[in-house]
Image 1: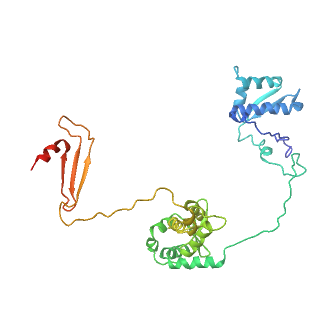
Image 2 (image 1 turned 90 degrees about the horizontal axis):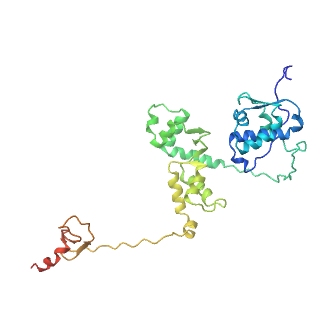
Image 3 (image 1 turned 90 degrees about the vertical axis):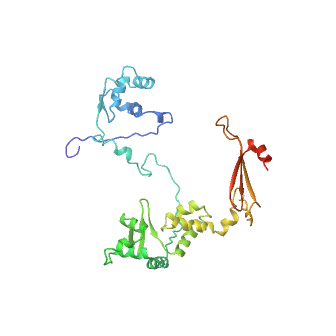
Length: 329
């Protein structure tokens, strides 16, 4: 009773984990299984009384009343047959049937008052270590913005400290596009680059970028990761236009990685310089092509191409006429 008016409210809730074989059931069979299991658990309260079964799935009513049920429905129909005269199936929309969701979604605290209480070992915290970036790092990052043209103008745009309306058009394209999309934010003099999952700091100083790459690649927690994994870790803390190129260059120049990680595959062959001649017919290149596709009775299957290295003229002969060629004076 709420304000002297009858209101439906759950007074008891039973939950259990489904079996692996039951996980393959559809939504209709799962609702029927829930009904059969509830009638079995509340048998001592429902025996000999008239009760209503209210569900938000209309298929339960049609499945239990079908004339030719399958083996699952037939077995469940026999199990609930003793309640057929005393029960009334009713459908209630999910938007209206919200009073039964509270207990199933409100877990009890793991306290001795909970019937399913499980004792847990207490692990006391011995100490907490909090490490923050020093102010020198932020000061150096803020000073590096003044050395870059695009960063300096972008900071003026975000602080609204500019007099010329044409200032946004003077920024580089990659910075201007991100500025138009509202990706950059300025907080305490530091420029931040915001994406959907994270918001990271923008760096332009090469020394700071190398420090970040060192932490993401050379530190004990990193263990000299590959270029791809190092870049993924760098993306979680900093942003710069040439971030991928800088990380790749840092990993390729890492002394430890170059000593340990050997290059796989065959070595490339050495190129030999072709000797040039000072007179014609000293060096002649010959190419012989065979197994040409036939195209008729007078077609040829092979061809020889001769090229003089000095004058670069070429002449081709069909091999079938080669005997006649040698007879010429």
